[in-house]
Image 1 (cartoon, rainbow, N blue to C red):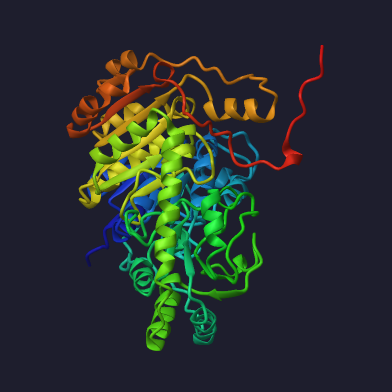
Image 2 (image 1 turned 180 degrees about the vertical axis):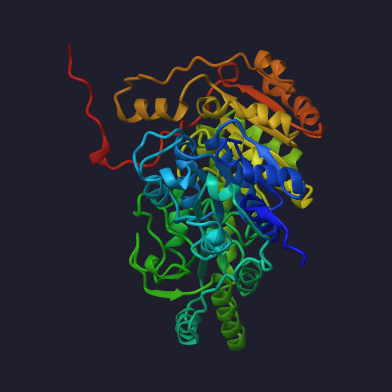
Length: 563
């Protein structure tokens, strides 16, 4: 009798991820995840990107998932390593990224006994539960696959998010028969009620100047959005909803959603349909932005009803299903929006774009040159920095729903590892997109070690480093709200020419924007990684300073008392 071949549980993990369509994973090898990564290497089906730290690895997996519209995977060790990724998981949770975090765990016989075992974190599962959408522990070799299937299903079920799975090292090493069924579980789609769509259509059919406010939950609904756009709806995007409608489309305001002319425009509209958006604080002036009424909402998360803003109608369900149902009903009625709506929208858009470019001062030329060089097919990845807050979250314009990646939760330092994840995703899927990333010097240094990953993985990415040797946003806030008292903002930064030379990373520093076109053309045309440093101290500041999100009078700090 022929015996069934035995494989390690680590091999089952690798084989299952292949069936999930995972082409690349990110992480740091350790004694507590080696059986899984050994299986990766032996099978040769999944690219493993060797990050220099777990925080960066989590950002890479997050950006890979967002830019490829697929499952991101990160593999870490247990204890301190699992703690290191916590901030990245919080970011993925804020962004609604479907991400599977697999962490090792110490041997089952020593678990939860507080024995100070190496790599142990007391009550680690509770920590992971707090920073993830859900967290699981594999209890036996026989239940590893079913646990992973449940975790992947949870990560990909709306509202999507990161899910962590602990697999003790003795279980990873266990030998079992390869399961016959490695296929992932189906992911259910929330189906809206027909009556709810009927009511929504009834409300909107009586309106002539409606807007769609698109959030990240509408990224897969582009075809349905296009049907409503054809009926004359105006479009405004959150930062997460950018690219669902191409940002040069005449019907789109893009992400110009909080400027004063836009708020005035909203009051000339007679309805707003918010789709898959949390109406986040920094995109609604801390929930004080005056939005059109009636304010109607569509969301796959029923708990979003009435949050942030009271709504005048709510439909629970998948955004594509609801919007297609709405389009069916409005088309059947022969409904069309007022033709003057889009002319008004276009003028508002042009006014705020002109105002933004005026406020950029010399950096308007940088924005224009980057847009010209990047064209229409690129990933646009941004860190939290004054340049992104000033212009990156609205310009450059991009044209596909998954082409933009940014640190949604506001944590600095994530942009450069996110660029690695997006570049790896472009290579894995053959999208043809080069990755363009924007970072500030303050955040950049947090994950500086990942520059070595950028080079080793030969990522096709151009990093634009805006270097003013300070925390620029914090300084502006101090000037605006703390009586000009500046403290803890000046930064000692590396000589990037020397640093890049030491790791064989091509680099150029621009101190005069007249030099930019030639330097940029050379950097963009080069295959592989490139660091383009913009010396802001040499060039000067923006004409209009960005001093953080709007503040209430209660938030103002009084001037220091006289000595």
